[in-house]
Length: 353
Image (cartoon, rainbow, N blue to C red; front, side, top):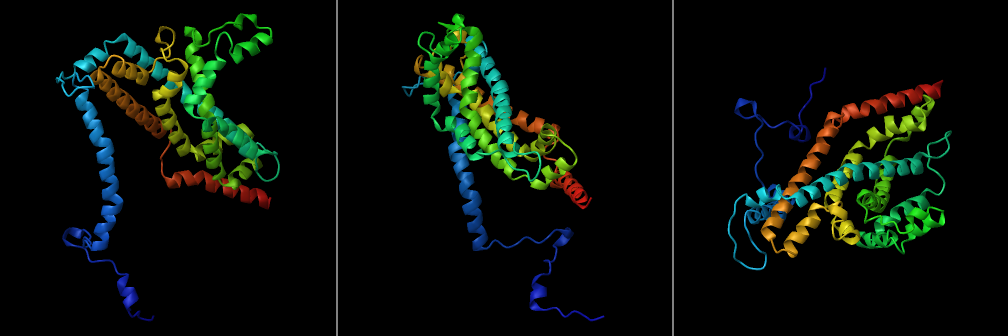
């Protein structure tokens, strides 16, 4: 057996000797390491502290004052604004409204977006290579088009379409023989105001998330779908067992972003129902905050509403992460790769047979 003679190259590969207690010896702080940490860790951290943490701390301070917004005078009132807020029936109604938006808008939007994405990418022939339907690029452009239009324009257009006297929607329904909708106020009825608002938000956002899911599905290995076809799985089973687990992280991210947009929804609501709708049925926290600050000049009270809205948003994001973890998300790379390896083995056995 030949003895190996250490060279300069092999010597450089030797691990550094451990310090006392078995701990690895720390590397010396060179100029390159210090500049790297300052550039890629210090600068982003400083930006986050200056533009996120400090303003949030200032908001908490102003939420505990009676500041009127247009003068330097104020008094510290402690938690009086928060106590007043949760005794305000209008604010509690706005809180319930945003809870409904956060519950239904992401669920409906992502369900429709996933259906469109699956149909475009996997809706081709049931035999042969997995491919999408013909004209997939055209359908992607058409579905994405509403998202290109600014939200304020979308709200104004749909407000005109919902107009009870000259709106296109009532005109179409009346032309179909439904005379009861001739002067129906979609945004003026308590029963239909919130569903009508939700429809517009979903219509405006579903195209973007459909394109997002299309890109995610494109990254799923084609042999997984081919193995599922060999096993006789249908389109629905393939979507549930392969597509959804493979794009789970994209769905989670989209749900959080959609939930944040639904909790705010200021642009759509202000464009369509600036007065909060019948009996405040479409009033949101951001809309209530805006009216209290600029109409009543109670900026301290309005800032307290903003703090509550930020906390609600953080709680919503935490709940999404928790549900994702409890339902099997984030279990590790090895567990996520296991179904794919089994599917590839099944595909190989089917090809050999």
